[in-house]
Figure 1 (cartoon, rainbow, N blue to C red):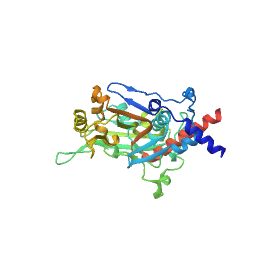
Figure 2: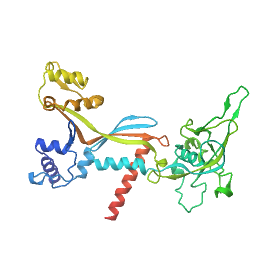
Figure 3: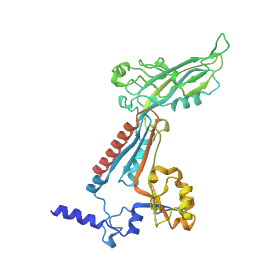
Length: 364
């Protein structure tokens, strides 16, 4: 009974005057500036009004939601509701910089008679996303020798030749031409890479996934003329985006706040304001059966929200319509580079975030 009374008391304390509630919960989008962009995290920020603003774990568990809106091989969009912007941004930064992947780190050029310089070719190879499960390999430290536990070796051996009909063969060198060497380097003396055992067994199980290769086979690396050749070995290692962008598993990870459009007063659909709202923002504003203008779900009409913002430059519109963004409702988009499915990237990022929080708790 006491616990229930405390919960009710805390819920009652959470009530604020309307204008303060709007400042706490929403960003107001003006014609030129956004207002109320700060969050109120201090427990006593509304103490003078008898409102307890302290963070409550049980309330967080009750309010927090993740709703998946879209999921395919490369893109995931989901709503994350009931969190502080700091948490959403931490998750975004972890996705970009801390989820580990495999990427080409060292390139040993044997012969390159193409027009592209060795260092430029090596840079292009490093940025090719690789279909390699990073959990199968160890993180290689600088002084450690490359081995089957921390390095995956690829070979590129291409020569352009002119065919009898005058066309050229292998005139375009693409990422699909990278050949995986499960036995390790063919140049152990030059590369100091010696495998005690091969890597074929790692991918022998059908459940292990496809053999190591580039995510996309059509990434152009170089163009050759007849007689020109490229011979090299490329060694891929494990790393994270905070060391170099080539290890970042996402093409991008970003979020936007949930848009909300409200009418502040009754606007007849046949009035000048009503007609212009419906003409400028079709679908966002409609006429109801009673002949009044109604605002629909702004989420489904995001392409016209900037047009609405322009209308708010005029007082006759700004006094009738409010365009806001919910501070704790994030529409999150993860675009994977293809190295891992986006849902797996999210799961790993959440694990890293959890470990960071646990480490902080242990240090306190």
